Image (cartoon, rainbow, N blue to C red; front, side):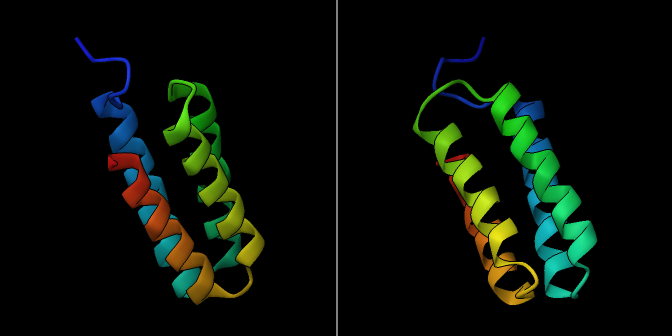
Amino acid sequence: MTAPDEVPHDVRASLEQLLAAAADAAAEGDAATARAALDTAETVATNKLPPGERRDRVRWGCAAALDALPNGDLAAAYATATADAVDE
């Protein structure tokens, strides 16, 4: 059983994969793919993470990365930092 503050394994894996894909795409200049991955990650965070600081930080990070596009390096940095927030 998962403690209330823990992220279920499948949700953690999904978010990490989506945010890594977003960071890679942004760094490569593929804003459309980065945007799609970030939108999906934000939806997963909204629907699957329990309410609280972690969910808020992940959602904020996705939004910040989206706002940073088309600056791929900045968007990639936000996506990477957001992935780190999933594990905190």
